[in-house]
Length: 138
Image 1 (cartoon, rainbow, N blue to C red):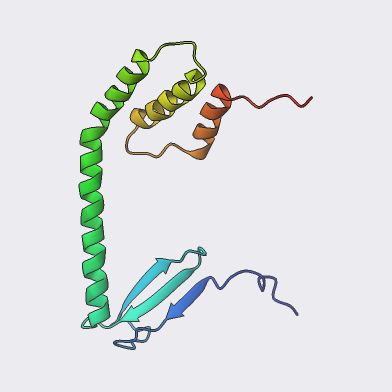
Image 2: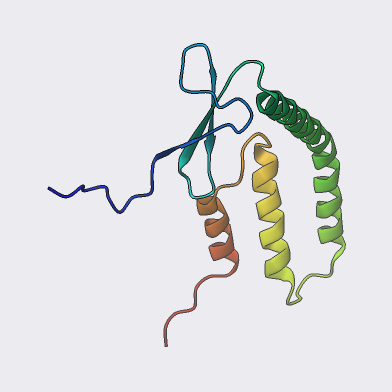
């Protein structure tokens, strides 16, 4: 009998820690990560493992940087959004740039409506289709 999932990538890949060589055990710590190919990897460490300590330091530093960037963006975004709107209003109407300006303003407004979420691909596509509709086939 053949494996129906043989063509799928390995769902969970175990990576050995070169420092502590920990095995899966209740006393050890498991780090699970999503890889670029969307597979999962797991690495086991002892609590005293230097590699684990470095991973935790880097992860905490990365999380702190993300929090700082997020706080800065939430504070700076409204003013930047306002400057964009003012600049767009100052442009003369009736130019070839009109659909580009309108699309940009609508995309930025969609993000401004909820700065805790990302503008999704369907939303981007709908906005771009409104300002740049597909041409009818000849």
